Image 1 (cartoon, helix red, strand yellow):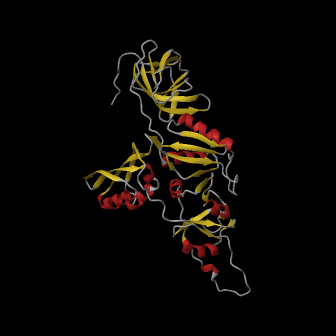
Image 2 (cartoon, rainbow, N blue to C red; image 1 turned 120 degrees about the vertical axis):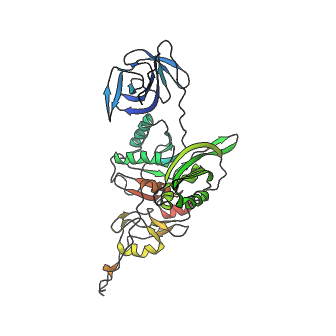
Image 3 (cartoon, rainbow, N blue to C red; image 1 turned 60 degrees about the vertical axis):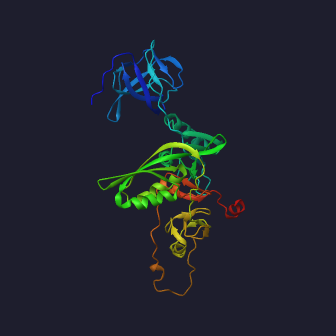
Length: 403
């Protein structure tokens, strides 16, 4: 419907933030009342109630994917404003003499954190253009200018703690960075905790799942194993809407499992619900990792002998290094393998036995699946061309000492 024209003084609230290297922060929102004009004194009302007089340098409206510069924006239109360096979500613009603010916008707090660090594997710098800690710091700090839900803390010179709203939020940042030519390593996602009255609390999420009725039992069973509590269940026209309350820890790795048990038909939405005591015992990964012991190219001969240990993540000809995770062990503990070993040659000929090696196609994980698979002592090496699972401590002897 056509926007309602409201008479009165100017009211506009910033609901989204963008960033540009040339003009800095850009506030985006809708003019709720009155007319917004560039190069004219107006009042800026912060979320904390502070007020100041500002002037907008530029004003843009949206036409499809493009922005068009204009002199004024009338009531009901969306616009982008330039000229306020530290503008934030929830800030309001009002009349210079009689400013009126709108109800504040609540920003959800981060629920998961990951450690971004410089890549220190033997394949360091082979694919990426930006590989140093300075490059990594500048890129993460620039991201905080446009993403107010992202928090970045420097742990030490080569590592940064990055907190976001979930695995999807952080994986989008990782994918954007690797496409821009960055090379780095990330740790397993960790839940953000909070101390309330001396008790450690963790975030709980409300999960809404729309699924065919035939998959109800499998989904409820799967969610229950990860400490989820079923709140509501409504069936209509062959589909069911399920609502769960689950610790944020329990949702790490759950989306891909839900897609599997529902044959890809489930629609999953999540939302922050509350902080509750950290009492739930969420089951950890029940399988170990197959870890390479040597550096070189994997051979079909050695991979054929390793298949009985578990599922492999690499194929013949792929480069590996000591400490790199090459597969998933069927048992709980980690197992070291030599996947670069070749068959010893003799002067006794075998009639086509080497040509008859048949390997199962390797398992290929997406970025989110890699993050969900990581164990506590593992990291994901991210480059523009590759995603490699590896142990945090590459040397096997040092790894045993630390354990």
